[in-house]
Structures are given as C-alpha cells and as structure tokens.
Image 1 (cartoon, helix red, strand yellow):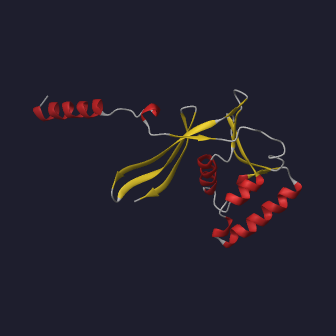
Image 2 (cartoon, rainbow, N blue to C red):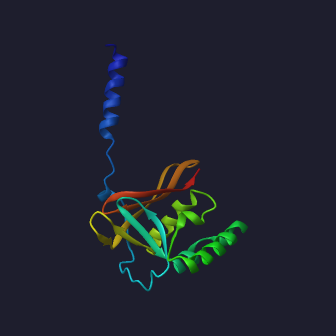
Image 3 (cartoon, one colour):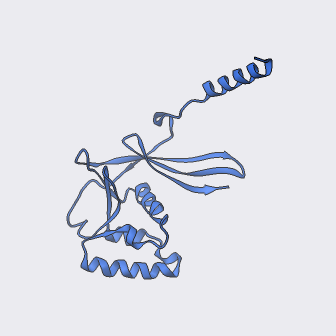
Amino acid sequence: MSINKISLLVLMTLLIAGCDKEEVNDLNLLSIDLLTDDNPTLFANTVILFENSEYLIKTDFNTYIDSYPFGVLKRYDEIKLQAIQDSNNQDVLLMTDYLTRPNDGIYVLASHLENGSCLIFDKKRNEIIPKLEMEEYLEGEPMMSIGGRRFYIKGNLFLETVDLMS
C-alpha cells in the first residue's frame, strides 16, 4: 500500500471513531405534559390527529378548530365550515379529511404535540401517555442549515419536522 492510501485510511478511521451517535439522554429536551383524562364530555366530538398500530392521538373538536390556521387561505374557510357541519353529524372526525395539502397534517400534529393539547393512547400497553419530550434543533452553517422539532415518546423518536431550511 502506498503512503497516501495508508494516510487516507488512518484519517477515515479517526473521523469515523470520532463521530459519536447522539443519545436521547444527551439532547436538550423539553418535557411536555399532555392531556391525560379521556373525559367523554371533553371528547364528545373528537378529531383523530394520528393513528397507527402503536398510538392513537386525538384532540377535542373545539381545540382543533381554534388552533388550526383555517384563515390563512380562502380554501381553509371552506374546510372549516365543512368540519363544523360534519361535527354536527359525527362524533369522530379524521384530521386528514380536512387538509388542503397532504403535508399540513404533520405540522398540525406537531403543533398539538408541542402545545400538549392532545391525548396519546398507547395501544400496545393499553395506557395513556402523560408526557413527551421535544427537541428544537438547528444543524448546519449559515445558508446551509436545517432546523425543526423532534418529538420523543418514551425516549423513542416519534416525529421530526423540518421547519426551516437555508
């Protein structure tokens, strides 16, 4: 092997060995208290924000309507009116039925997680999750950076948003 190849190999080994995987315990996490009372009166009209085989995340209809940026675009007024009409006939609505753009759902969910205005039910353990952790991150250098929020449920990354890119 030539000296250049050996030098390159040593340099790569040092770089790889010097990179530490970021552990959840090393992060600057903000603890967020969530709704913990599945009160039938509060959830008489429910909006399902997210559901998979592990979790069900929901909020009450009034919180959903009050917190969603329906007024930003004219189309949102139509969506808000439709959601209100549907809530008069249905006890449970799906957030995904009231979006103009598919990716809006990620940010609506992130907003409710950040504000603690939702209830998370762990389907596998049959229990309500009382809190989660959130990390605000900014990575990179000026004009080449990315930032957003990461949400952790029981120490596991659940959702990551990209809120800015430059």
